[in-house]
Amino acid sequence: MASKIIAHNVNKIYATVRGPVTAIDSFSLEVEEGEFVCIVGPSGCGKSTFLRILAGLEPLSSGRVTIIPGDDPAKPLNNVVFQEYAIFPWKTLVDNVAFGLQMRGVSKATRIEIALDWLERVGLRRFAHYYPAQISGGMKQRVSIARALANDPEVLLMDEPLGALDAQTRNVLQEELLRIWEENRKTVVYITHSIDEAVLLGDRVVLMTAHPGTHKATFPVGLPRPRTLKTTSTAAYNDLTYAIWESLQGEVMRAMKAQR
Ligand SMILES: Nc1ncnc2c1ncn2[C@@H]1O[C@H](COP(=O)(O)OP(=O)(O)OP(=O)(O)O)[C@@H](O)[C@H]1O
Ligand SMILES: [Mg+2]
Image (cartoon, rainbow, N blue to C red; front, side):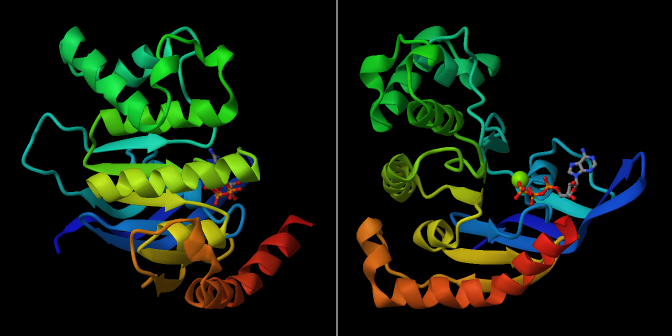
């Protein structure tokens, strides 16, 4: 398998009024084409910073990040889905999903067709002409995911995309994500606080240490696919989530102590 993302010795130092803050300390990650990698780490360890660096939204202080382009130069390198539903309130759902395609100059008829297709796949086809204020948080997050995927980026970067949702809605969207990912097997870097979610979704779970974030451990997830919520009731799933928790708990304690 070919590498799709290479992040090598990434360092990030923020300049603040109280002096420099090292957010990420020599963190490296390689992601293969078609791989779904989940990053888990205690609050403040630099997960969002790292994702923003991957997305090119934040400069790194030293190190190197490369997303290997594919054959189609028109394809965007990445798209990000954030925890807050970053959709335009003044656009209908279909226009929100079509937005990236519009920016790339895709004709109106084609972009509407693609956007409606993605709304169908996330179960929102009949709400296509609603505005974001008229739908629930879970539905808004579906729109964000559909918009990112409609753009067909080389890699999909997700920062706690389901973090703001209630547990049941999150479960429904986890299954939807699994189903959609099975269909297109996009390269995904997915940040989550939840070990349960990381093991359910990912091919590999990468743990970061408490602030300043660096690599703590990597756990391959060998659970068979396709996965559903039923996967979470298997012994293999439970053993792995517990092993990851054992590795992470010291870091969580360290992060909590630092916050006191
Ligand atoms: N713009 C900024 N300026 C200064 N410091 C920052 C900035 N953004 C983040 N930080 C600091 O960098 C560290 C990492 O922050 P980051 O948001 O990446 O963590 P995180 O792992 O995503 O946390 P959470 O799990 O709470 O979302 C924290 O100590 C944070 O205070
Ligand atoms: Mg974050």
